[in-house]
Image 1: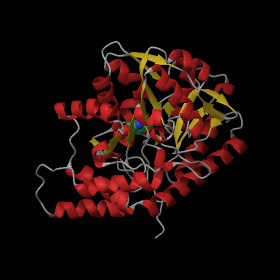
Image 2: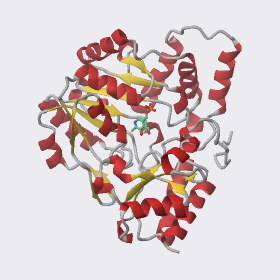
Image 3: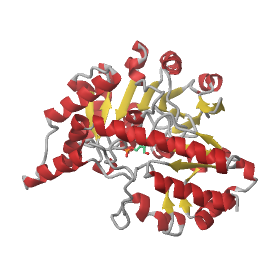
Image 4: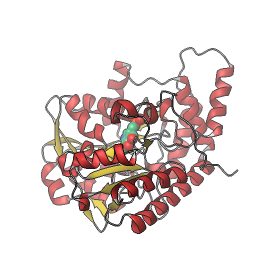
Amino acid sequence: MKVDFDERIMRKHTDCVKYDMLQTLYGRDDLLPMWVADMDFRSPDFVMEALRQRCDHEVLGYSTVPESYVAAVRQWLHDHYAIDAAPETLHFIPGIVAGIAYALLALTAPGDAVLVPPPVYPPFLNLPVACGRRLVSSPLHIADGRFELDFDDFGRKVKGCKVFILSNPHNPAGTVWGTEVLSRIATICEREGVTVISDEIHADMTLPGHRHVSYSTVTDAARRHSITFMAPSKTFNIAGLGSSTCYVADSALRKRFFDWLDGLGVAGGNIFAFVGAEAAFRQGEPWRRQMVDYLFENVNSLRQFLTARLPRVKCVLPEASYLAWLDFSAYGLSHEELRDLFVNRARVALNDGTTFGGDAYRCCFRINIGCPKSMLLEALERMAKALEP
Ligand SMILES: Cc1ncc(COP(=O)(O)O)c(C=O)c1O
């Protein structure tokens, strides 16, 4: 059945971050929200139906991790990423941000160094600091219109680090890391005794022309030293359910991490997290494919609009997911002027580039295009009128 991704859904006053935090974060609530990474599509009907059916039982006592949920996760990993995950290699995690914090706390000591590649999803920068660890940055650079790792810098900075946090695919750069790059990371990290946390939350939204490679599958070394986080939350727009999975192939690493999780009781699931994720994984493939095609059309619409109307904006288009990185340096405006222009003249809410790695990104903003095409075009039109009046 064809899914209607064009529908504009009113989400205000549902306690949703994307709309109901606008006033607090941007100082006004009449903005088109093109920021936080959730989509404006209706969560799939088969997920809603599964949740409703579970509600019909009318007792919501403590739940075990359903075997059928674990089986659905395993099948998904097998079918999409050629991962044969034995049940004991998987652990439920209520959210990936929390999961990364747990991994840092479980596997490193206060003061240990954690390497991250900015511009990067802000919690990668904040979590090590919040956990009392030392943040080390190895910035990405743009080559041929896409963000890449600088291996010279990476090779130097990784020395002495205990953990490297990889966004695979990358948020906000949109890079789908290929086998060759991942293998190089694996070789270096194995040599330096670094554990790699591979956050693969955006993997299921890899766009046509690209293929997601799960980090743990590239080499034996990668398999040994990695912790992988995955989730149906972005793909099926069910982030509010708090449902993710951690995969650790190596038994020694797994014991350290999973024992810590179980000892502290921090990674228990809730009924709806299991039910929603299982429905998504079991029934979601046709929906996912349509959604990815829709995102790809939005990427093309964004490209066409920028070429025609805003040629001075430098854009890194996503190879996966629905986040694009826009650089407005050519306008010669300060960070504050750009921010003011988008909020008070264009009335669109974008993510501020500085939150992804500091002042180097003061003229950059991230736009979320996981929305009906009409909403994307409305936002772009407003930005064009404000930038090129
Ligand atoms: C790379 C990345 N990891 C994790 C998250 C959030 O994960 P969770 O909601 O499971 O904490 C996001 C959300 O934008 C993300 O982009």
